[in-house]
Image (cartoon, rainbow, N blue to C red; front, side, top):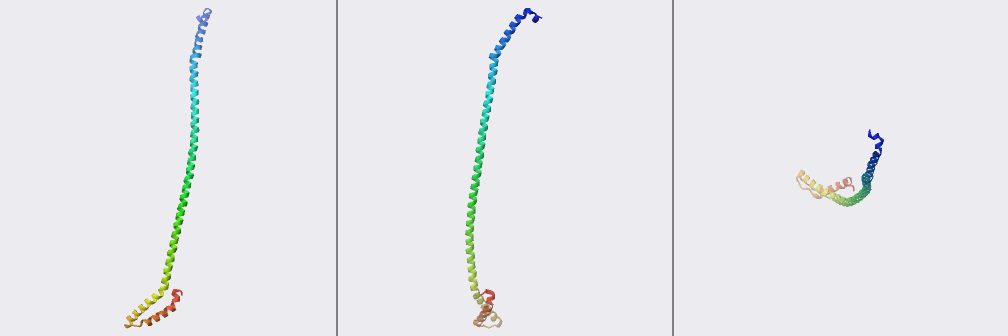
Length: 169
């Protein structure tokens, strides 16, 4: 085997050194710098992506806080609007209720006055109707006209006796 022959060792060492030297120079000067630059580029891109993601996360967190604040303000504003609308509605209802109560009280007073007037005039009308009815009955039963003044005296006497019972006099 020629590799083990000491006569070829010097040429083998030379070619070995030359080959590995050229390989070392090519690797260290050309390939490794490209790989190193590529790794640095990837590392910087990854770092930039991480920083951008962090900025976006912070931005989205601030936007989320702003959104929550806007929602909270909107809820408070809606509550205030609802509260004022409710108060206005209650005021309107109460004012209309007061107006209706006044109108009802006026109507009750008018009705009481009418009832009082009817109570005052009722005995006179009842007496008049009683006199007319009695004279008609007597005329129909007897067949002759009777003096209205005597019937009127009888009706007045009866109404005075029984008037306290019916009219509360």
